[in-house]
Image 1 (cartoon, helix red, strand yellow):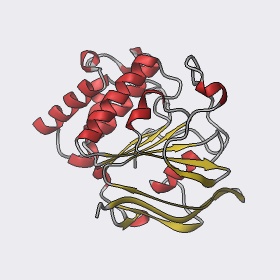
Image 2 (spheres, one colour; image 1 turned 90 degrees about the horizontal axis):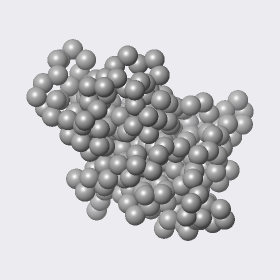
Image 3 (cartoon, helix red, strand yellow; image 1 turned 90 degrees about the vertical axis):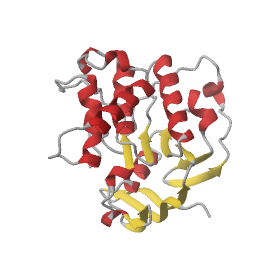
Length: 254
């Protein structure tokens, strides 16, 4: 039987007395690519933050790789890409330096980077199409390239699970295609993916299962639903502001 990577059982989350997630249960097994879909404010980003232990449950449980999330310590097994932040904002670092920080959970803070670390960084940069920008300051990249840098940072840690919060929202088409190619390589190597999206775009062929969140509850768990309305138009460009359900994402995983 394929082992479960993530299990959420009857999860409940609320902010300031307002329920955001209501009795949510789901599993993600090894090798799956699961998309969490839903409107802004539906609770989808809160769901993945609860999975990561970044927001507390008021009821229910989350299990990662067989361990309850509050006791989970094997963070090198997991890579997290938050909502688009602008990787260059206040970060006086090169692209390679930012990506190299993704190795810290695996090698530890005190040990200097070795050959395996350098190879992992180079491989991650190639995967997202930024090998030629490795020595450039992150602040000189476009928004889409900065998002690719965050994805490369997660890949550099060579995790078993990638958790991504709207990784392609508002970025250019070239960056969306580069991200889809990088994700395809990760999955082909046996990786598992949980991602939040408003629209899937070039990621759609990779998705093995879709979970639709509506008003804090799971309204659908199965095949990817067909787009509807103006989202189905081929020239629809998805650039939506983040919903009011929670503040913007975080730079580091833990």
